[in-house]
Length: 408
Image 1: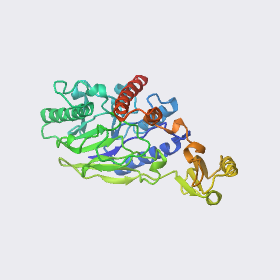
Image 2 (image 1 turned 60 degrees about the vertical axis):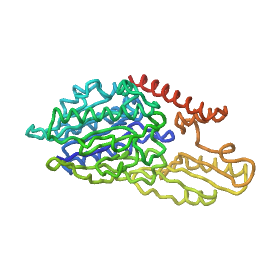
Image 3 (image 1 turned 120 degrees about the horizontal axis):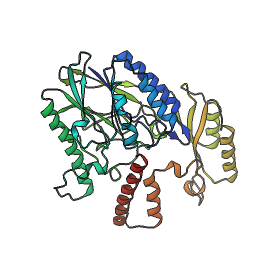
Image 4 (image 1 turned 180 degrees about the horizontal axis):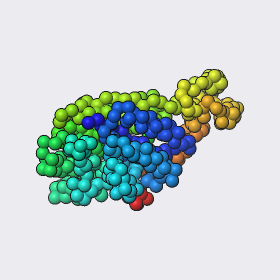
């Protein structure tokens, strides 16, 4: 049986006030054709289906239209919730979706058996089992290992995640002896390369798990949350698929992909990396004002969608006239058919004024993660390092609590 692994769609994502729905629709069209071409039996989506807990009607339509196009195919779909997703929103249609061979697990279940999903072939023979683990929130882990004492909340969270996966592995041994099993997950693993677009989870990502947290009972582990595809702990069968489209300028050079593994006998193969066709270029143009202007004048897009551009102008000496010229340049190209300038910055090598204080066109509070804003406040108030760590811990707990309530 063939299993296709993807994650982190972030439907509804807005990059510097520009919607990414066009490239998302192109990806989903391509994904549908790939499923048909490769004769995929199971599609697993490891969390962060949406970018916000309460997506718009249009964004929900993108999701449901894709699922509806799989009706009548042999492909079974397993979807888990991520830290961006609302548990209630993902789980709400589960009874209807189950009739369409779509299984959803929006949040952790009180009974671990409800996270185990049987995968059967067209003859209804059991082939393997999936431990469909969603993003595990603090409240899901709080009562695990409650009889043990830990030096820090971070250690307690790691132990809770480990206990959750081990419990599922033990259930597989008990209920499905000799039947292959794989796992899904939405978490932060140690040693990963991150981009600018992941939201911090579990105390600012300090609760990063080791690859050995996943029991050997699981022959393949399909992970989500990190937007760059990568292997964890040197094990090619513990993988992040990454996001299928670039979600920030820091991902502009990333080669996006999905992963195709196959169950042969009782073993999952090392996955085939299938690159997602790029539909839009995110480009950074850097240099003097004249150089940047020349590049923009001659720019031709490489892909079918209008390019999104970030410009960074570097000059020796401060000039108010230059700042006005930059403003005019951005205005002149505000609606160009080949590209759109989303972000711009001007810096001067000489003079008392620097980039941050003087001019940083395009930067606003919307460009910053909540923790970055809070850290700026702590820095401005000259809070000590010890007190700062304590306050950041409390801030994240409050932030996660508010986010969870918004998604209910």
